[in-house]
Image (cartoon, rainbow, N blue to C red):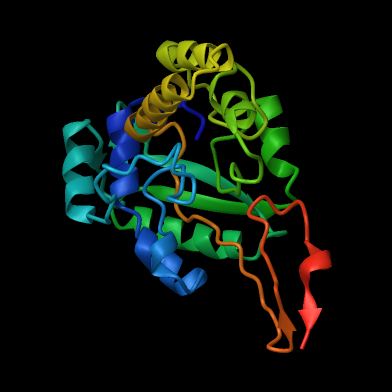
Length: 247
């Protein structure tokens, strides 16, 4: 989301929009796995970053409506909320190279319409997201971002959440505590200290919600029963073919 826009600037409004979304339904119907519904950025497969004690972020459209009412966004005659003469409406851009993304976009559109938000969808090539970030035209984007393909994702995390300009990360979000924690992390070599810093950075992202996670994407591998000793590299860097044997 472009957090410079009035409808996204207030984190309570962002959380309200998050409450309106049926993540479990998306995970079950699109990914065929309800366990990949994502209430936070980092999945349990990243235990160093995952906030294990967090409450599940379940759909509650009644609570979403109350929160939007409390934030001053009142339902208009056309069913769309307004505040200070501005409609709660935005364009959601997505890309077609990942087939699940356009489908998820239509779910987001329907779920938000139910609480008084008007979403228009535009799909194109994947370059649409960094281009819209660069020229400032991005309002909101639905995209895929991976943090688990490297041993320590801190460079990607800081690129997405600790820079004034980013191609794939949170747009126009600045949290000075998060940036300080990131710099401290890079200069720290004690694992206990790094664990504490990771936990706090993840908690800030969960509380501030500068991006709105929907689904964790699983790594799916199909293996013939005639093959044995297949080992899956979680970083997707090696096939480990030397270990594979045919029965």
